[in-house]
Image (cartoon, rainbow, N blue to C red; front, top):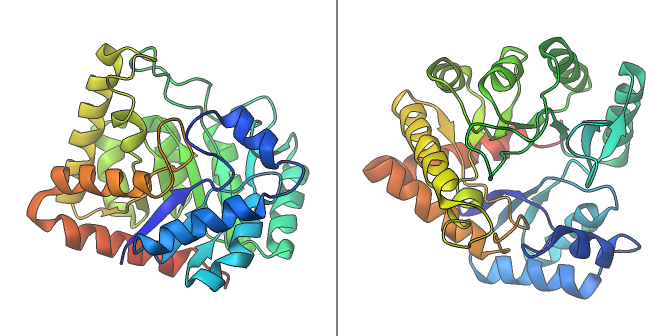
Length: 287
C-alpha cells in the first residue's frame, strides 16, 4: 500500500489564498487531472482528502477512478465559526447548524466527516497553538452526532486535552496531534484510532527562514519522540502529508512523510505504516 492519507487537492504548497482563489469559482480540471496522474505515476493508489468548501476535492473524487485511484473525501471540513478552519471549511454556531452540515455531507456523498477542533501549531512560538480548542463536551457531541449517521470522523486536533477529548468520544483518526503529553500518547495508542502526524509540515520548514528553526527543531523532535512512543505501544500510524500545506507539494509530500516516518519507526516501520493505512481504508468509507 502506498497512499497519502491526508491531502488538500485545492491547495498547492505555495500560497493557500492564491491556490483557493484559482479554483473557488470552479475546479481547474486540467490542474486536478494533472495531480491525479502524477500521484498514479508515482505508484499511489489511495488518497484521503481533507475537503474544501468549493468542491474541488469532491470533483477530484469523481475523476479519480479514471486514474485507478481510490479517493475518499469528507466534501468539506466543519469548523465552529470564529475558530480555526474558516479559510477552507463550512462553519456552524449552534448544535443544530452542526447537525445540518453533517446531514449535508452525508446526503452529498461524503465518505466521512472531518471536524476542526483546535488551531494550528504556531511555528513562531514553541508550545503555542493558534487558537483555543473547542470544549471537550462539544467535541464529544460532534463525534457522537457524526457516528450516529454512520460516518467515521477525521479530526484536525492539536494539544493534549483536545486530542484526549476526541479519543474519549471514539474519534477515528487524529490529524497532526502536536504537543501531546505522555497520557495522550498512551490513550492514542490504546484507542485504536489512527494517528496521521504530518511530520513533513514541520520538517520541510526547517532552514526555509520563514519561521525560526529554534521553534521548528524542538517541535519536530517532540513529534518524533511521540510517534516512536505511540508505535512502541502498538498505536496505529499512517502516512499523511497534508499535501498542499506550505512547502508540502503534491506527490513529493507523501514521499517526504514516508521517509521521515520510516527513519523514526526503524525496522518495523513498513509494517506499521501498512497497517495504519489499511485501517484508514477500512474505516473511512461510506457504510
